[in-house]
Length: 473
Image 1 (tube, rainbow, N blue to C red):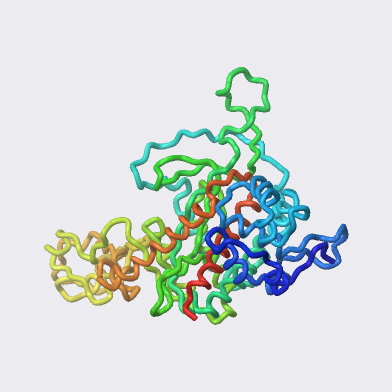
Image 2: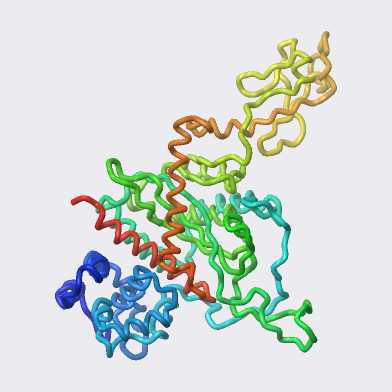
C-alpha cells in the first residue's frame, strides 16, 4: 500500500499551467517519462512490514529532476522543492507532502543495498604522494598481468549463469529504459560500444581521521575513513591524484542511420579509484551482454583508447563475439625478421613461420609470450635430418614480433580510413562523461557507493528520456 499513489495519466492531468520559457524542458521531460512500467522495479518487496511507503515513481521523478536541473546536493534539492510550489507539483507532491531527505536516501539504498551504508573503514592513510607522471601518462600497474588474469577468470565464468549482483535493480531499470530507446528509434539495434572511465571525488578526506594519541599529524597509525571503499587514484586527464571512486561506462557510439548520434549510456560499473579501467572491463562487458541478450540487440564492436590495448582484453573481446577497435600504445609495425636473420637467408612464410635458405621451416622453441613467437632450426632436434648447409642461425633462435597483426585481423587495419572513421565515434563516451558533469553528479560529495551508483544511473536515464524527444515522429 502506498500513501500517495498516482499513475502517469493522472499526474499529467494535474500538472499546473507553467511558464514554458522557465519550465518547458522539465514539463516535456516529465510528460515523456512514463514511470508506470518501472513501478515493479522501483517498489519495495511485497509483504514488507512498516508504514505505507511513498510513491516510488514520484520519488524517482524527484531525483531525476534533480539531475535534470543540475543540483549536486540531495539536501539542498529537497529544500528547493519545498520552497518552490510549482517544482513540488512537477515532482508529484504538494509543498506539504514533499518527502524528507532520509526518504530519498532510503529509496536509493533500497535499489542498492550497500552493506557499508553506515560503516567506515580503519586503515593506514594512503596520502597524496606518488610517482611524478607526464601529462596523459597512466599509473604503472602494481600487479603486472592483472588484466589478463581477470579476463581469463571472466571467460571461465561465462560458461555459468550470471550471479546476483548488488546492482541488479538499477541495471534492470536502465535496461528497461534502453529497450524503450531502441523501440522508439533513439538507439540502433546494432551497437558499437565505446568504453572509458572517469573519476568521482569522494566527500571524505583522503588522510582520514586520527584515532590515535600520537602528537602531530604525520604519524603512520591507522585512521578512520568515513568512505570505506574510496581509495587514491590518478586522473591522467587532469594530471592530479584524487580520492574516491572510478566510474566506467559503455556508450552506444554509432548513431541510428540518418539521425545524429546521442551519447547514451547503456551500462555502468563503479570501482575503487586505484583500479585500472581494463581490470573492470571484462565484468562490465559480460554483465552488459547478459542483460541485453534477450532484447534483440547485437553487439558488434568495442571501441577504447590505448589504456585497453592489452592482449588479454583483445582475446576476451573476441571471445565475447565483438570486434575490438583499440588504439595502440605505439604505432604497430608489421612482423619482420632481424637484420642478422635476413642476412642468414631467412624469410617469413604465410603463417609467420621463418623459412631458412634451404627451404626448411623453423620449429617452435621455448615458451611463447603474448605477441612473440620464438623459432629455432629443426636441425637442433636430434630426430631431424641433418642440414648439409647450416646457416648462421643454425644454433641460435629467431624471434618474430606479431603484435601488430592483431590490428589488421579485426578487419579494420590501424591507420586506415575505415579505422579512423570507426574510432572517431569513441568520443561519444567522453561526451557521456561530460553529461555526468552537467547533471552535477561529479560535483556531489557523497561518501557511499549506493549514492554514487544511483546518481550515475539516474543521469543516464534522464539522457535517454531527453533523446526520445529528439527522435523524429
